Length: 104
Length: 453
Image (cartoon, rainbow over all chains, first blue to last red; front, side, top):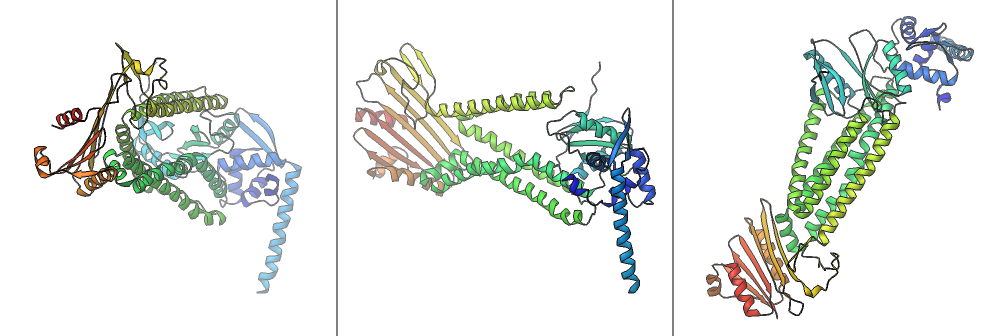
């Protein structure tokens, strides 16, 4: 079920993976998502925890270190590949959209 | 160590009313009461400086309904949220309460779809017993009471208004079923309101705090009415009510002990599962014992043997023998005396029965008398009762006015059998049925008339 859900990424998932290019903890991810999306996307701690758990299970990210209560994660190669595929899919969608909309 | 005194507040909200609970807690904090802990629907506050606090309720998927202290997985989730700026307050089952004074932190759940799914799951787990399963089982009770009213014949109708048991059954179960329909309708409304919103990725729409308070008032009123009904029902049950009362008196301490144990600081998931399983078995045993007591109470009572006399209390519709009561002596070597008084009444009607059975030795016939006084201020209920007795009479004769006047009555009817004398004496709103079985009819007449006088 989890894997099936991860075949395409939702908007928050896409931004979370984008913000995990380097080792980051929960607060870092929340801040980065907000800054990359220029405040458009906000991810709550509960939602983020659920998604990170899902990503860990699917091997898209990995835990790098645990310092007391603080846990840090980074995207894996598999995750990068998935993110790239999603980027390409979105890029194709934008290109197709541009072509059609320019003609109108 | 000095025990801190908390201010306890009751707030009834269903698991899908999370915004109302948050609003309630935020209001209290603004008034200078900060939440310290909660136990079910009771919230415990401590006085503080009035402050603006944001509360958030979240359902954590991996927590279990038995959890009252966080397990490892829940602890990880709590740590994560605390790292992100939220302060953990307490959890119960899947429900977790956090708060913060920082206004910039995003809410805990920004995925409305996941939140909606969790709320529905949690609501179903917590409310399916009280608002779906139990009301369905109570439909049987409601049905049997209505059946007795509709098909019980004239005596059944009179009994219904005088006894009050079925009347209260209809009241209690009727209120409960109506309440469960109302609660389920609210839940369905919450689902329907949000299905489209979730699909569109919009925020969920919750019932407002005001709406929940209104609904809570409805629930509390219904529960109070039901409680009065239950007390009334116990009172109308007589001896059976005592058994059920004892049963409840056994159930309540067990539930209290169970809640004390599960809210213990060191209670973990395994401990709580054990407490719940063992507690449920004990509760079932008490209920079963109580039910057996009720059943036994219908079939036989106690024997007090003194100087060769045995007193038996029994239900007069069921014959009691010494064998049933476990006495291994020749039945006829005893003197039986069974006195029974049954007094019941409601504002609509009252019915008092007195009976007395006596047997000096086995050779003689069983002498007994019984007197039943029925009274109602409503003529149609009186008519039903009189109709019932006339219906049962074999050869009912109306005695002439002289006799009636001599008995200070409006009308008198009589049924005469070989050994039976039965009189129905009518005076205004009152009907007295007086009946006797005696070996000697003259003796019967004398005794019965002296009894009436």
